[in-house]
Image 1 (tube, rainbow, N blue to C red):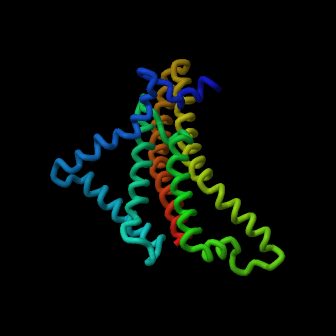
Image 2: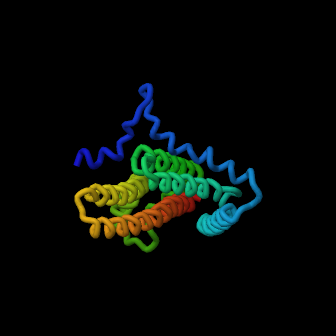
Image 3: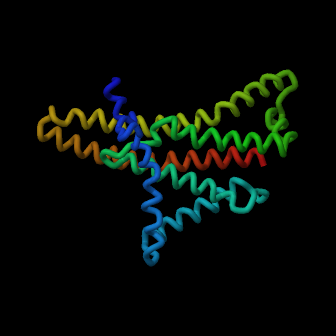
Length: 224
């Protein structure tokens, strides 16, 4: 099992520097290309996606949100989506399968939302700890439960993204390692199964980045 999970370790190093994490910044090289040509179908499709996300996040945040606040969550979605897809290519390090990456995104955002809410809307944050219609004897317990649920939010965001990325890649690795011992018939079936799993992983990459961005938007809307 140690060798199995070692495929996710950032072990490649040159001059004592772990260069695997450079895969998270490859988008800086690919992104400007879209501005060098006339609008292509790919760029038009991406503009449609970002416009749809903008409308949805604007609806979640409500009319009282600050102007341009949706761009933060659209950028978050795009960044996670790119890193999830980069991990599907052979010999490319999957940075989103590590808590170092996911917690770095979830923890500062959650902490910023909490600080903003408690400093600017203290009464609203206190009232949010007790749901409407809670009986008096249950109020202390509800405060404890709501406090714990708020505290574990960055952990659940980070672990959800990391676990989904690790599970799919681990399944692809396990099935692929059995290839040399199979017959030609079973090998062809294995290749079909691997292609279907790769399609499933592509869908998971989109869904998990969308879930991360939507949940972050919901946490932001609760403090405003």
